[in-house]
Length: 558
Image 1: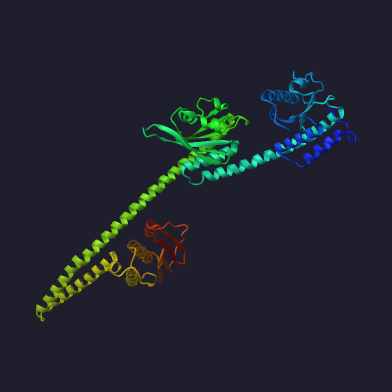
Image 2: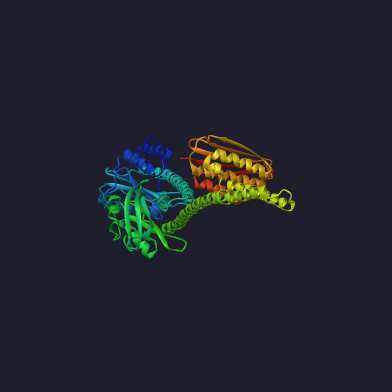
């Protein structure tokens, strides 16, 4: 390389200054190459200035000050640049018919008078880029211009290293963002179809794909296993593209049949291609991997695409994509299990609701039987005893005393039957409404429980929502039963309020309480929660040792 100083005021010094101004702005990637090529071309009046990127000894991409020549000439340029990168020295031909060193190519073959090709090497001496400058002037490249181009190449080496470092940092950052987004997606409950589409987007970010799609397996109407996809992703958006493949049909069908990844670097000529993708979406490279569940059965696929200007997918890409696919398949299986569990829970709640309704009907029936049949029978016995006592002589104490004791027992049994009937289904709930039934319940509980019940009712003036009235009564009844059995309380506050849209219930005691974080709810509290859930409501239990317990229920009335 020529590294001599440049004379003041020379065109070469002007070239170096202009290039330094471009590099000082620190553009990244393609912008760096395009701007520098345009600047050099303008200063030297060159027909073409191009910078090729070198990766593992090959020139991968070429950027110039104008559109590159036809494909054949571009391959020739790529070959000349590869020689300069390999030899790591200036290749110069100042005569139209003189072959460029190390090649069989002459400037005239490319339509130029002369050409200079300079390797751009970083600090370790390896070529990271190649600078090619053409000229049509008779004098070719003077010595001072070559000096200037050499200085520009040295400056470009630093800028390329910096751009590559920033690019890798950006890729690492994007990769971390995609990884976090991917992790978040698989840990959130999603419908399988929605989850697969999210995975396509994340996988495309990881592997820098231009487009892609995903699908799930299922059964066709005739019972055959098929895989299907509903949409195609490209440029950040989805468009509807329904497809269904049987085994061995299309690339997804091959994956379904062979259960192995498929790669193609010539999609337009692939027999299993999708014509719409090949013609309208410029798909040239494709990769497709299966989604396998825990039993290694194929439950779907992920397929990504790149255009002709992008590098082909590799088997390393396939391995990485399969790792994402395995995680996705587990998330799909979990989603299906959660959905099945939710369906079972809904079924259990329906059964609980039906069971509760049947119990309520049976309670109502038993209460009527106790009142109408057993109660009336006891009343008949009581009347017969009264008649018998009037006809018996008063001077027969051996008969009179047992008769009076029997009458007392019949009266007590009648009272117990009435109390039991009220507990099973209080007549006040059907005859007078929820407020009256709660007042009766509070009075009866005080008599039996040995603690004070402070009842506050708001907005229960009108009769409506029988299901909700029954549920609220049973919730309060169960909560008071729990207090009697466990709380050791002296005062219990019961608050029930109704608005046009909601019913609120709150039962709070000043008893011993318990640690709600350590102890599971008993059957009573579970029953309260299930009654609330049955009507679309929520139940919350708050308690601490020594600070009592509060049960709050919120029921919608819509």
